[in-house]
Length: 103
Ligand code: SF4
Image (cartoon, rainbow, N blue to C red):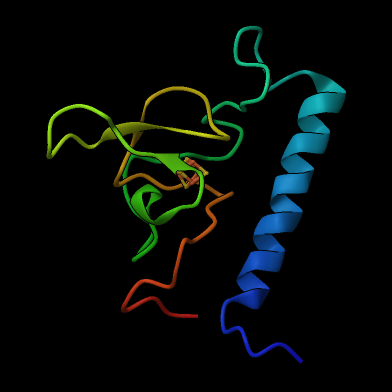
């Protein structure tokens, strides 16, 4: 038995990630030319707001902005297009458990 309190969440994220990549590669739908390794925001139900305590700024896939301090728009290793630090999507994978996160 795992002692990692977020292990069940990670399993769910992994399953969704595999499903995203499998469907993406099979259908070619969410994958676009020029963004061959990324999926669309719609496909992962990206939103511009956090999901409770979970947000892109706490996700393993978030690539922070490189500009001025306080800038919130970065990119993502998985999802195509500009990504806000305060957004969220269904393939969120936490860097660590934020304070106040339930589950
Ligand atoms: S929550 Fe989704 S869009 Fe945001 S950084 Fe993680 S994978 Fe990318």
